[in-house]
Image (tube, rainbow, N blue to C red; front, side, top):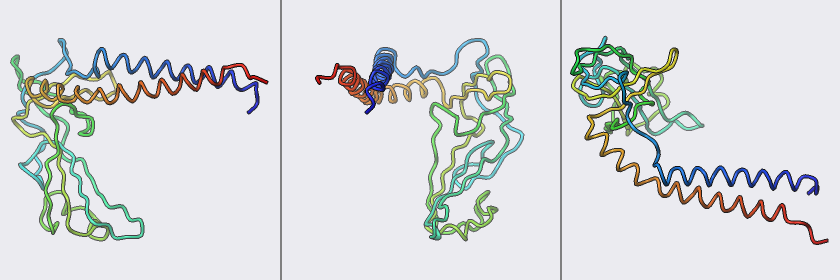
Length: 216
């Protein structure tokens, strides 16, 4: 290694170690920082209706959701999955102060108690949404695994509008359900803290060895 590069690499390793140490300490002291939106702009209530209602291949009809399909592939590196977002994100929420119209973010951005419903089937014939998909039968083979993450009338939500041009923030579930979910997830932060601490230690050791004067 060029001796002129050693100080640069040493200080870089030290900076990376500081970043890891800061992150580990921050997560250990304050948690992940995840929390449902608060304040006057937050919308808390229950979904009552949307612009469209879609029959679902798993569970009850929904207003807006993500449908995924997986199965045995056709070989030759062919994609073994299929997915589609269906329904309309424009929905109405009933709040204590009246009904409010909101625009839901994409299902892969939902937080809180949003969960997939799963089913396994041998045939796709007659299944809503999936049966209209093209080339699925050519790419996939049974058994098929169907997963649906969707919102329906009666679901409790907490929503905060995004800035102009950006999607809002959506949490699924009532306050008690969201709190229980956050408590469970907070327990998983300690492995992250431990990993960050180890990475910080490794970076500091590397920085120390790199910055040590050579003993020529």
